[in-house]
Length: 616
Image (cartoon, rainbow, N blue to C red; front, top):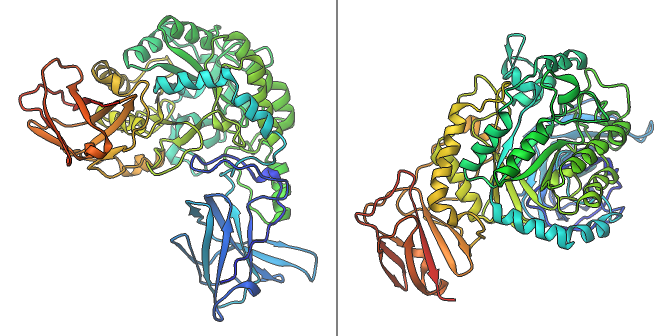
């Protein structure tokens, strides 16, 4: 086969959010990860074309088919096979580009292909009609890394500074935190004018913090919610105590979500907790002080790219103009196109978003992290400016990857997503997850995750070397739903006994034994599929700390267990003890593994943890 690698010049505006499995790579101005496969360079018979090609980055890619001329007829039924995926059907014509007489018709499959690895790949196309070329282009919502090398060296110096690295050491020690989605939308509970979010025929997520977007509520009408937002004054103390009792080490609250409303006192906007509500206090500052009093670290979520109240159309018009000229679809998800503010998006960034980030940093001197979100169509320069602004004011504050263009200090695996044990992370990672299926309070979402399910996620993430940021969604009064709070308290009880197996641990050479790598594929995945995983006495997850390995089980074996991962080649066992129990444990270590007798040992309903000390 003939390898064809033809780069196409692509605008930087196509880049958005980075996938956690991608490798770090500095790219040049003319290297934009497009692959173009010409039909004359293909091998195969008429009606079937095959190529080999070099892909520089893993990720989700669109498959486009280009035909010469302005084609009125559709392609008909065609198929494309690559990376073990087959796309079949009649791809939709999305663009006709070029001057009269030199047009090209572009058709695109609705589904994408996920390339797990960079390197050499093969692609085969079957079509009854002749084609000119295939274009393999990054899917709009997957930023493949840095747009240029303009800012990379400066970012790397800041990221590698002693302050940032010390902050990362703390983060890796903490392991378990509380996420809080709370705002004006919490009063509605997922219902607007008697209609549930699932009942309205508009695009967008059905999680209730997207209420304004889902119902396309005009800005002035949505702002009326602030007049009745008057939660209980004990909110901050109650939340901080719950996080402490749950064994969490840090708390992150939505200081401003996509709706544009700030829970803190802002000088650059009156759409905030102090100026617009009867509560008339800075609730972010109150929670910050309550968390510090409980010995908890504090962070804020901040939506910098999307702001449906003051952020115009989220830069959509500018992006679409450039993308149209390249034959690339522009997706408006998360953009206010029904009632955009009259300013430009660039003005919003300069006059509200960046100033509010500065306000938070000035008001909260012991802030630990800023959890940016909604980078969407911000530019690379703007993303870098957010990172640099944080560093210049307080270099001890961590920044997550959603600041944009890979400028974060750590990765997140995605909403309710747990990476595979085989994925190679370029940075330390965190998974954020929910206790039911919505992030903010939804009055009719009663699909609560059991304590064992949440513990499983915590342990599985820790075994892969990451953090778990578990979300609660208080209602409009600031009350945490009882089922959510109860699950957190039960996790806290488990951690009182077994916390040594979580806090400050790292990934061992083996992550698990006896069980399949159960992945969590996102909020919608869990909502549709539920949780049906079962656990046996032969299932173990491992974490480590120096020369100690923790073997974690979710069941009561009632007899002896054999852990095959402790073959002699993986170390000599010096001692075995059961966390939370002073009883002497009988054990035997041999070439085939470690046998531990747990007969008559009292074990709780959520399993046990063995602390296994190896020779140094």
